[in-house]
Image (cartoon, rainbow, N blue to C red; front, top):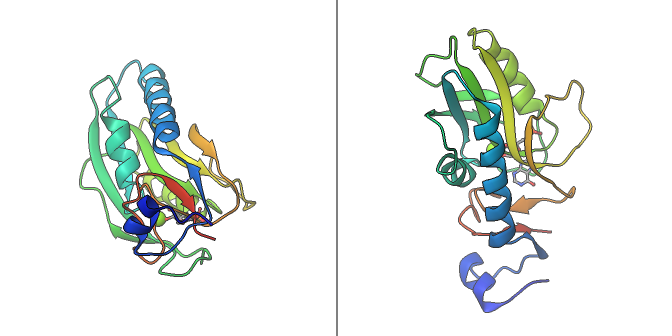
Length: 184
Ligand code: IMP
Ligand code: MG
């Protein structure tokens, strides 16, 4: 259990099991992902679609390091509620208003668990005639679910734990942690 004053101040006294990715490790990986994305799209319009809410910190760090013109919009899909187990049901609570037709679309997600959320979104958005559609996920738990969406850009192969911080929540708590921790 990790119960340093720095952690406890932020969590309101709840210890976390361990810090899985610290601020430095995240920053270095995000820079590399942004470089990969810049290199992968030499031409065409690129619309970066961030999945709220979990992707908000990752997205804001990532887009500031992409060195080409982009557009940014958001999607809100809901699948978990405050439970820790994926229900497999995906609801689109906010639909991007930006036109997708003819553009490269890059979906930015915090974490892939079963991949059901993104698999559904790929089908839904693919029907809007984008030029291409790819996924960038900070974390991939690599859990089995078929069909799995193809992940073009992945930050880390995550352990099969329940992770919080850097945008990831448990019942809306812990999103603000600057590191990613195993909640236990
Ligand atoms: P999937 O559809 O099973 O891949 O679920 C993906 C979504 O579940 C992500 O966007 C997260 O919001 C949430 N999720 C999955 N694993 C975790 C976790 O370890 N911590 C917090 N949220 C998670
Ligand atoms: Mg989420």
